[in-house]
Image 1 (cartoon, one colour):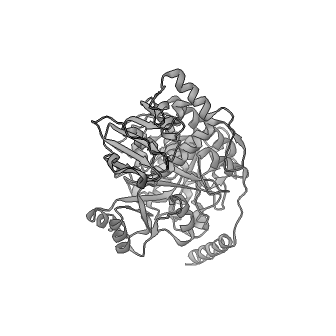
Image 2: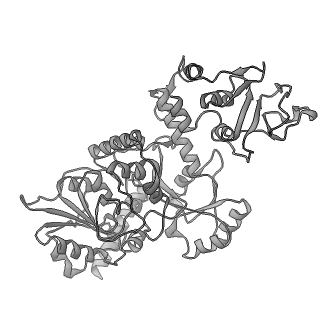
Length: 509
């Protein structure tokens, strides 16, 4: 439990500020009205953390005075010694971490040997305590409580330093605000690029953007102004319903280096896949999450229903070919050869001339909202074209292989241990798990499937609990998606009617 706590870095005001501190400082923690006499070594930097700085005697002023909510783990990263009341969070965490601590009321050193640390952890974290999760009030273990708080800390760290938003659609803003809020503070929605850069520079902060919704030159302008950019996209387990139907996301990806679907430059996800250690505990968690997703038939847009609409011929190799939206950014950036959906189908047939090919158009294309129809002269290359909406998971369960440009369907196929051929360069290609027709030279590491799942679903995205709006784990969202049925709002129903009308007009044209 001590190792778990120290790894999660929770306890005390872990959401607090992280002021600049000298390495090897001596930290004194005092409550209001309890300023102790400062009998401290003459050498070394002294830091006094107090709720009442005005009560510090002038002659006793240390080199630095801190007040308010401060992350104790940040302080412990710099402290050589802690002086505090023994029940103060800073003293407790210092002892659990093995940092010398002194009782400020008696001047006696606080034990930090292995036996003392174990007894302290039992007294402070287990004995006489009950823990309940915030989503439905169910009782949980101390370990589960630590893990949940660890998710909250990760959420805060991923969104730290963002003060301005640009390019968020109006119907999505409320949900993005929940992801990026820090207490009562929510990043400002800018009125254009100049306003975004001015406010970010004034606050020495970053701008969060939705990449497809900002002008092409905005990132260059931000770099020239020395303003950091944070890119936000939907997560890979998104919601119960399509974004095109205006269903807000329960998961987002926040990327400071690039964006996961752009193979021309690194991204935070690629860095995780290339460099992050994947210890056995993390891989076991990823394997369990993958099993839960497959068992519930969950994909990006929630739980699948029904059976496969295709009856496959026995004894014949079957391949599912996944169509995409023609102008989607992942296609424009990741379809390196410029194949498009028609070129993808031609390529699949060329690689598998005797296979039974099933072509599945993108649901946004079928709904009439986006473009991506096949050229007429290639439609005959498919043995079956699914011209009606259907769930992806039942198809993945019955075919032998999947061919994609950059579609997330390829990742969902990998979750179900299907063979995947990538005609483009999606984030999951290049790690030894797929047959790749396009090489991404940076991707040299060979990964297990569970390492891919750990990075893509556990370490990279952020999640919100659908009921409470609180940060949650991937496992919690999967549990919610597995148990909920999608409900179409009035706005969603209107969008579907609009899509059908567009489809009729395009066919007539």
